[in-house]
Image (cartoon, rainbow, N blue to C red; front, side, top):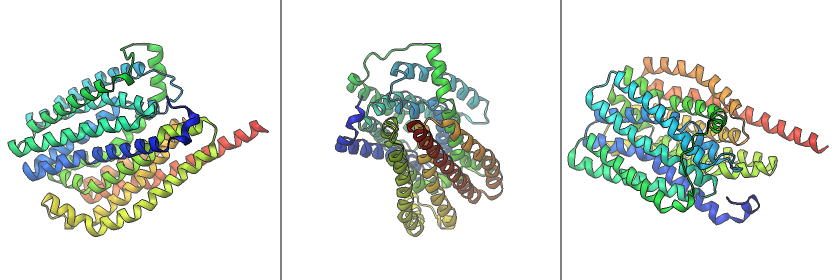
Length: 424
């Protein structure tokens, strides 16, 4: 593990960590959208909608199976739990979530081809869930650059095989199968190559340890579930009340927003998690507070060219890329971009609260906001379609970012007050 005393002497290493975090998050961000793009152009808009829905549903189960461990594991700089504990805990959550997923799929009103698409997408997600444990361990030890390379290569391999197979077959099932094989082979090869980082990893069922991990990360998994649901619920409701084509169009309109979200999230809330935890561990509350404020200022500064560029050039470029006339969705597109900016602010503030081990406070804010906006989202999408879906994203993240900022500010002030009182 990288000593705290060396934090300020590792500019080049930290740059590599941030660079590969941003690259891997960017590739992750466009992964689903590239698949949807290829499917739209080569197979059809309806099948693109089926794929978008399947990816959204399996992403929700990824969040449950991941169980909030990644954020906690990467900031566990005191190594309260070993990699073997996190790995065994992941096996347990994956088994439980897989059983739930299979039951829900076969009880749902899906046809045979849709069931196969859902199952293949879920198998890919399972592979990603297991790889995520090892990438979390690398992040904890300060080697986020290696984790980023693993993630990037796996997604690029999946891109290439999916695209080439779709060009040949003009179907969806076979390309997804080849994508899954690419993810499996690449992750297995790279974990073997970097095996020296994962010494003495073994399966160890220790109920006492499991209970501690469960209690520690429970607020995080609830948060992640609520967050993933609120992000993807528009697609669920559009699939239910509109059509697969509208699901695909909404996913296309979300493309720039998703890239901005993952790019900024990786830069400010992803790669900085471990460093933020180390700063806080040294008691530098002023430095930690200033770091979070600078990140928020940077997010809104980057939002200006993002929104202006998207407003003037976004819809024409997307229309050309996907071969669709999207000129009637300019206002929805603008709302999605603004909503994504506040979504990034929520990610930054939420990560700060996790570093401070105030995940329960974050849960209260998110649950209170999500309970109201979840119902409102259902009404908006049901009555106004894509327009309602775009508005709902804005309604979710503007008030939530305000709640989280107030919670963060009050928490930092309380910690500073307690520190001064102890000093006196």
